[in-house]
Image (cartoon, rainbow, N blue to C red; front, side):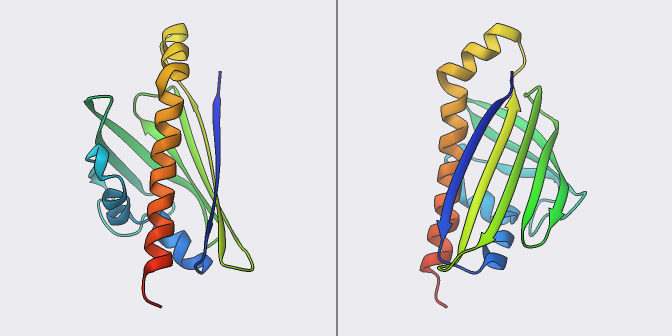
Length: 153
């Protein structure tokens, strides 16, 4: 069974700035300090681009996990998609969509994933994983919003 998360974040900043900050490895590390994430291989700093990979190592649920993603689609500044190559999910696809608004940019995240381990995975997802991923994305998006809306123009 595929779980789908859908988040909308309105940001008072130009679309190009929101798009670039969303794919900035250095900012991602800064924005999710709680999980002590580090980029350990592939693109480990700056902007990640089409067909590039990054391997993350971070602490989730009290243990360090690795997750390797590849940017499989990129349409500057409208969208990009990262998909898991290696990790602890059966599948993991994160679409990032951006559109201009009267006040700035609407950022839409669509995360679709499947857990492994049959019923145990489904129970774990229902008890805590879905909420953890939603909170992780919300924290990251709020960091992007705060950074861009409070920086000097």
